[in-house]
Length: 69
Image 1 (cartoon, helix red, strand yellow):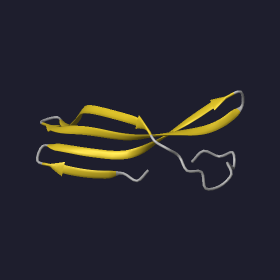
Image 2: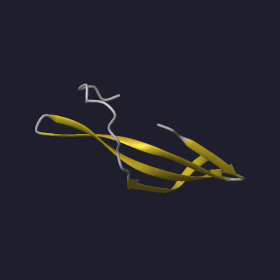
Image 3: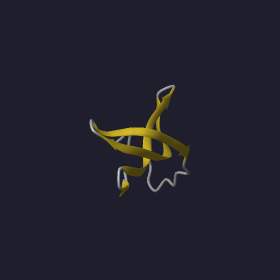
Image 4: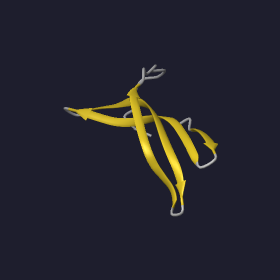
């Protein structure tokens, strides 16, 4: 969600929140991490050379409906 991209020559950055479904004992939840991915353009296409993700705070705005989108 909320993907942000930037290309600088042969290097590109993609930043986005990662929505990770979680569950335990029948409960379902979603963990969120803020991810940064760096790509380099090669003769074979764009190739990922760095990935980093850190946990992100979650602000719940409505009760969980039981459906993960």
